Length: 413
Ligand SMILES: *Cc1c(COP(=O)(O)O)cnc(C)c1O
Image: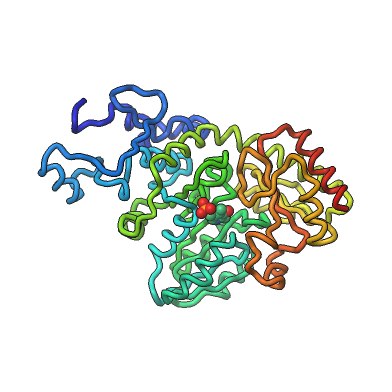
C-alpha cells in the first residue's frame, strides 16, 4: 500500500464542491457523501480506531506540522479519517463549506460560543432553550466576561431592542427544545448582520434533512448528533458547521487545544446513522403528525404543539424554513404534574427518557427533568407548564403508538 496515498481516487468522488453533489438528493448524499475508500475497497466506511499516525520520515512529519500537507493526519485530537468522513457527509448534507465534529452536542455549542466570543462581548439569545444551552449562556459565559440577554426571540423587535454596541452573536434554537417554538431564521439573521453580529442556530431538532439554517442566512449551525443522527440511542456526538473562514479563524485552534474530539468509533456509528436518517425522519415525522392529530381530539389535552400542524400559530415560519414537522411534539394535559405523572405510569409502549430522535418513542416531563433547575415562574414564562410533556415519536407501528398514547391520556384524565 503506498504510504503517501491512503485512499484511492474515490476519495473526492462525492465530496463538497466537486460539482457532483449539485444534482444529487439528500437521500443519496446521506449514503455516499464524504466517503473515502482505502485500496482494500471496503464497502462500508473504514473505522480508523487510532490515536496517531506514523510518518514515512522526519521531513514528512515536519511538513504536516507546518500545515504544508493539509490532507495528512497528525493526531486524532486534531482530525481522524473516520471523523473526517462524518464531517464531510454532514457538511455536504447541510450545504456548509466545512464541519467539525465534537464529542457531544454541548461541546459543539460551547465551541461555537467560546471559540468566537471574548471578554467584553455581548450575546443575545432566545429564552426557550435546552437546559444546558441556557447554563452556558446564562452562567458560564458571564464568568469569562461575556454578557448575555435572554429575550422572547419570536418577535423581531425584541432582538433590535436588546442590541448593544458590543453585541457580537445571536443564539437560537428552532424548533426549540422542548416547546417546539419556531424563530424566523432569515429575519433574525438579517437583524444580526445589520448589527455586525453572527447568528448561531442549534439545529438539533431540525436535522439537516428538515431544515438547513445556513441556506436561510445563519452563520453557524450546531448539532447534537446524539439525537436523530445516531437515532438509535447508542452514542453521543456533536457538530459545528460554518464557513471555512469561521472554522479556520475561530474554531480550529480552540478544538485542537481544548480537545472535545469525537471518538472515531462514535463517528463511524454516526456515519451509519446518516445512511438511514432520511428514512427514519420520514417515518418518525408521520408518526409524530398522527399522534398530534390524535391528541388534539382528546379530552383532557389542553394544547398540542407540533410545527407541522396546519393550525400551528407559527405555520407561516414553518412553511418558510422547514421541510417537515419532525419527530418531536409537545402537549399539555389538564391537571398539571399529577396528570402528567399518571400519564407516564399508564404508558405501556412509549418509554420515559429525556432523549429524542430515537427509534423508540420517548416521553419526558420537562418541568421535573431537563428544566427542573428553572423556577416555576421562569418555566411558565417560556411555555413549560406543569402539565406539559415532550414526546419524540419513534419508528413503531403508528396504530400501536396511538393506542398507547390515547389510553394513557384517558387513564390520566
Ligand atoms: C440534546 C441537545 C443538546 C445537547 O446535546 P448532547 O449531545 O446531549 O450534548 C443541545 N441542544 C439541543 C437543542 C438539544 O436538544
